[in-house]
Picture 1 (cartoon, rainbow, N blue to C red):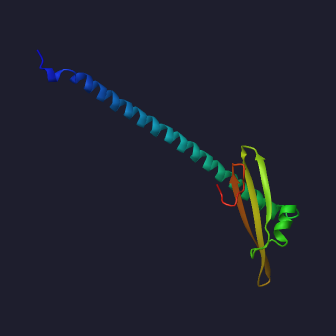
Picture 2: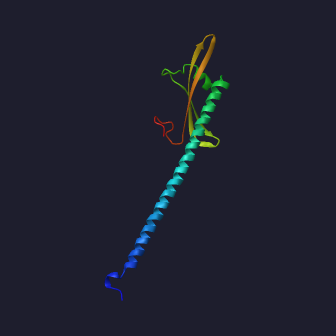
Picture 3: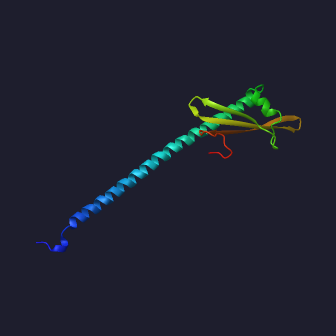
Length: 139
């Protein structure tokens, strides 16, 4: 016969093992959901970067290849660096990037170097997918 103080030890061990296994399962679930969320945000960040790059490509095409357009004209006339207003264009609904709003701004300055005249463009593209895009502070 077992002494009185040894009774019920196996039930305590079983409860302890169940608590440890439940904690381990909860931890694995938490790590898994965090990993999935991180992966989704990484993909969204890559898509935002591609959207901003497409805005830069669009702006450079407008400034260099389509110089008679409204964006290029606004960029060349009066939109300089020293606090002058910049030419700005908002792009929405691009194929494959429809959830992003892309804002492209352009500054330009003319320079004379010897007999050659040059125009330097600064294009900035901001891509975001929230309701108050573009905000004063980027999301």
